[in-house]
Image (tube, rainbow, N blue to C red; front, side, top):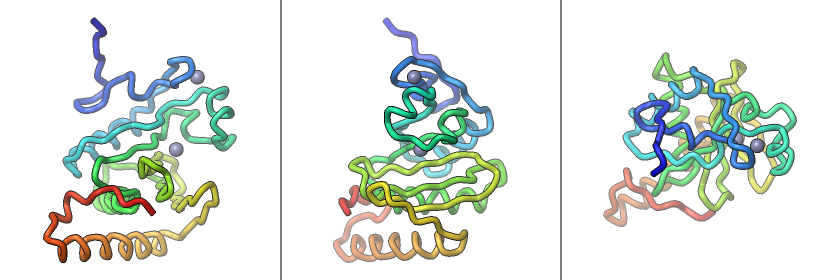
Amino acid sequence: MTEIVMLTEHFSVNEFRCPCCGMLKPSHGFILSLEQFRREIDQPIHVASGFRCSVHNRQIGGSAHSQHLEGRAADIFVDGWNSYRLAYEAYIVRFLMIPILFGGIGCYPEHNNQSVHLDTRTNPTFWVDRGGVRQYMRDDEFFNFLQGKVKDQIHDKEMAGIDPGNLPGNPI
Ligand SMILES: [Zn+2]
Ligand SMILES: [Zn+2]
């Protein structure tokens, strides 16, 4: 039997390990921010990528100075939410909650799992990545962009009589 060691109430150590070597360099601030975010949205969060050693980071084409190398980042997804919705929620929570330190939010609407990159860099950086092509946005641009995407979804789903809090992943 494998013992599951938890980092926080909702996240286990193994979820953040590098998939190639099992290494882990957890950042306290990042893990606590993610846990706080998990509690705020009250949805299970899947970690698609947590810590990466430099070998693994190169293999998957991560940027040379990726926050994943420092353990200060994760690519996450939530069942039933597309990446716009998840990024929007992360943005809102970051804005409203002092203990949440997300400085970097990246939205990946073309990924199959609709993932969002979150990290605790100190200079706020927001982007949308479509098939590897990144568009960086200012704080207010990013918010307006996401709000537009989320509004459309919620409106459509409300019209269809579906709970907007439980949107299906939207293949875009
Ligand atoms: Zn590795
Ligand atoms: Zn990432």
